Length: 471
Ligand SMILES: *[C@@H]1O[C@H](CO)[C@@H](O)[C@H](O)[C@H]1NC(C)=O
Ligand SMILES: *[C@@H]1O[C@H](CO)[C@@H](O)[C@H](O)[C@H]1NC(C)=O
Ligand SMILES: *[C@@H]1O[C@H](CO)[C@@H](O)[C@H](O)[C@H]1NC(C)=O
Ligand SMILES: *[C@@H]1O[C@H](CO)[C@@H](O)[C@H](O)[C@H]1NC(C)=O
Ligand SMILES: *[C@@H]1O[C@H](CO)[C@@H](O)[C@H](O)[C@H]1NC(C)=O
Ligand SMILES: *[C@@H]1O[C@H](CO)[C@@H](O)[C@H](O)[C@H]1NC(C)=O
Ligand SMILES: *[C@@H]1O[C@H](CO)[C@@H](O)[C@H](O)[C@H]1NC(C)=O
Ligand SMILES: *[C@@H]1O[C@H](CO)[C@@H](O)[C@H](O)[C@H]1NC(C)=O
Image 1 (cartoon, helix red, strand yellow):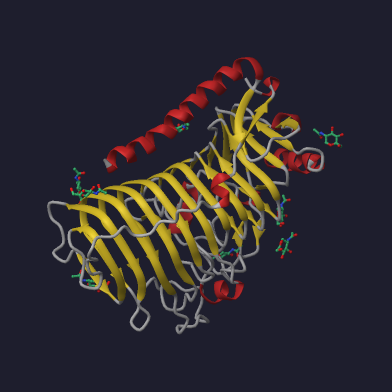
Image 2 (cartoon, protein in one colour; image 1 turned 90 degrees about the horizontal axis):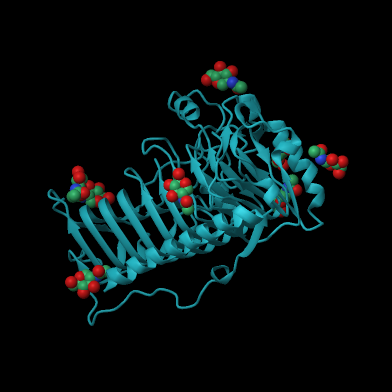
């Protein structure tokens, strides 16, 4: 029964997407291409108008920069969409502007340059205090935006290829003095949409919205080798109102990592991630989590709702990562409807994630972990059901786990539920949980909010690219 509902939930959006795709390809024959977005634009331009050359060799960095600078003049007059046509468009980092859509045609690929002079240096993030890879500055992300309103990066499943091997290699050899670029970073912005694209081989994290609100991430296919370093899929960081749906992610790090700043810098900046919805995610990540909360969570994480999640050959399901020194909190987390196949851990909470920005952190800054709710899950071929490790004198409380069936691998670990410094309850969970999570009688369902977040009800508009801009 549960499985049936789950499967129909997974399949229906797929059928819908297929219908939309068919519809849009029919439309593209006669009247251009249509796509769903938070806002449509009055004006359209092509990268070619600004001298772009899609031969995979010529640098388009100046073409992109010229285009954005020129087109920003239309922001107040109904906005503008910049079309990237079929071809391979090599470029370094460029910035976006407000009331702007970057639209990639189906066979358009933006290829990230491997020439470091095409990647300007930007300041470290105030909530991190330093770069993640190196103490100094950072390379600007391939596609970057700051202090924007209403910005869309989308297309007919075009590709953005970070050509990350160059950066992974330098990172592994410790030859970088600056932190690697992300593929897409949008900072201090409101009304942000990143959708319907294929993103491959980011130098580091793929999609990093930070200090932003009303963020939509939809229909992304994100692909990186499962051994590539720090290739997190989507990292909402100090953001409010975030909706992530219909994404397929194969990566070398967490598929989704929810963050809010690092130790004393994150505590001081004090900007949480909250009111977030994740739906219909498929994740493959053998060494990382399906959804991680942290490890940088010093500004707090609250009110995250996740449902209809499929994880295959992934290290863990939802994982909380923290440590003394982080401060902050992870509260009111709700997850339901998750299928997991071949997992090392189903449930994992780590309280010793001891990477710190510098020695200035305060070891007495203890995180508060409270109100963590998991229900309606099936996991098979599992090595450990749960490793739940709170902090001595700072237990993780209000844990609730219900209606979860876990079947084990041929060689499971003897201690299936390893619990320390935690408190909560379970109901209808197999194998039976640890004594710190006693079985509730009579049986209960762990809570999941019955209200909807305003961002879940925002409807997309149907926009179009005129026929003379599409092949
Ligand atoms: C850029 O903007 C100027 C001024 O609005 C305009 O004259 C010009 O044609 C635009 N387009 C390009 C391709 O430079
Ligand atoms: C992009 O924006 C950043 C931050 O405002 C700025 O430092 C950088 O110079 C901009 N790059 C370009 C090409 O305009
Ligand atoms: C962007 O917004 C932040 C926060 O409001 C502000 O501190 C910063 O100065 C702004 N930057 C620019 C380039 O306007
Ligand atoms: C987009 O392209 C990727 C890579 O080719 C493919 O796996 C995915 O199914 C495509 N998505 C859609 C909606 O066509
Ligand atoms: C980066 O670090 C190396 C040593 O690891 C040094 O030789 C080089 O000058 C540094 N480059 C910059 C731009 O600071
Ligand atoms: C777990 O197994 C029980 C007993 O077979 C069943 O009633 C329940 O629906 C299953 N739960 C899920 C999430 O499939
Ligand atoms: C089960 O998990 C083990 C690793 O623990 C893996 O080697 C094996 O291929 C998995 N079996 C199936 C049927 O997926
Ligand atoms: C149980 O968890 C603790 C803390 O995470 C760890 O140190 C210990 O080795 C684990 N025990 C077993 C038997 O896995």
